[in-house]
Image (tube, rainbow, N blue to C red; front, side, top):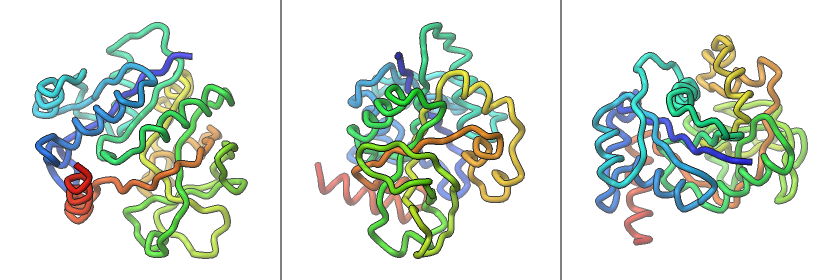
Length: 244
């Protein structure tokens, strides 16, 4: 099966405007994510954006990019437009890697791709174990409940996604910003209207569950923070600069 990685990115994030072009070690966040996806080596990588500034930055750093319309309500709608414009005939899976996850682990990206192929799943994502109790209360960190306890080998179904959760919730994990769709599933997903649940909780994956699209979850070894706020950015910057 052939996978295409599409990274949606835009400048108008509400909590941290201009976020994709913020620099760490002299390279923009979006280009860090692009290079991570390329290193995973699971297929071709394309950034989908509505902003010329992002397009220029990605091209300057050797990445492939496609310009999309500004009307999209979610990143998934944006990647579907990109897929249609690219018009690749022989793609089976589309990996949607969020453009604000520069610390995403390459092996975890590969694990998700492998599980999708092995299980012939319609839609899959990653989650990691919660080691810090503050995560349960932090509404910027999305949590996922799974039918079974998550381990290295299984790929259980998600039963719910939430921003706020309780310590005693069963089988609850830190959800990571990455999805893998079968091509037909992506087409189905964008054909549905945004669900009430999705709009209320600001979680687009609930549109899938509300329309009976099963989401399988693979265990990620690492628990990277995404860049949602100024605080996140400074923490990630410090970490990445220290590592380099």
